[in-house]
Length: 126
Image 1: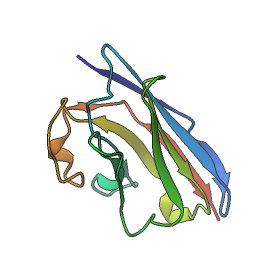
Image 2 (image 1 turned 135 degrees about the horizontal axis):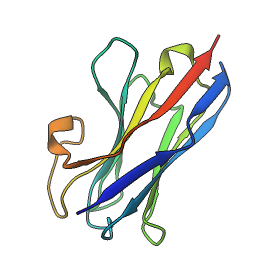
Image 3 (image 1 turned 90 degrees about the horizontal axis):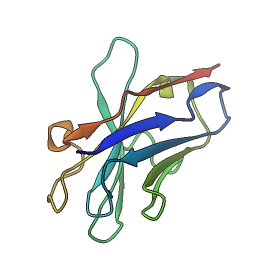
Image 4 (image 1 turned 90 degrees about the vertical axis):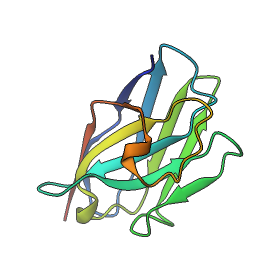
């Protein structure tokens, strides 16, 4: 069983930066594809970014491409999301998610992920 705990959220002005972290415990996540999803107020959960366990390839939603960077440190069992040039529309609860080891996924579908963190709030003021 894999447990995920996000941190790093907070309040930031538009144009600012935040780095989210997701610490995994229970087992190593090196064989798992990982992702970040977000849920804006009053909206459904949406894909933000993902990273493949196979080749480290990264995938982004069009709305964050060029501003957000996903990365992972397998030695520390930690996933990161560097968020730059933040906009008010980035305001959301951000969730870390992981797939079971070895699973081949499309990355963007939340139903493909087996483990979720509790979420961390990011608020961007204008």
